[in-house]
Length: 89
Image (cartoon, rainbow, N blue to C red):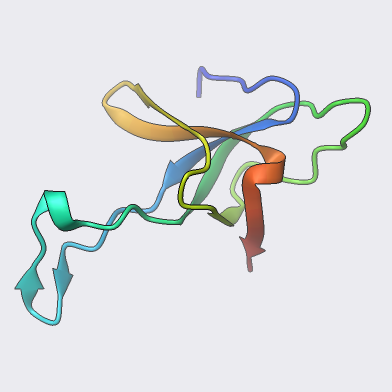
């Protein structure tokens, strides 16, 4: 990965949205944004907040968390560590 987040930020690869529900195909405009994903890269943290997340963690985050960005055809979210709600084990 050529993107290195700074300070207390993390780069998240969102989980893909569901394409089908009970045999019904959902159009792109009606798909819910996924609220979970995998951390791809993390920053160093700050002097006030230690980085507790690490690359590879599966996480849950809020509906409006982060900033969407696209890199090499893949969509990612850049967010602060505090925007992450939980780690999925």
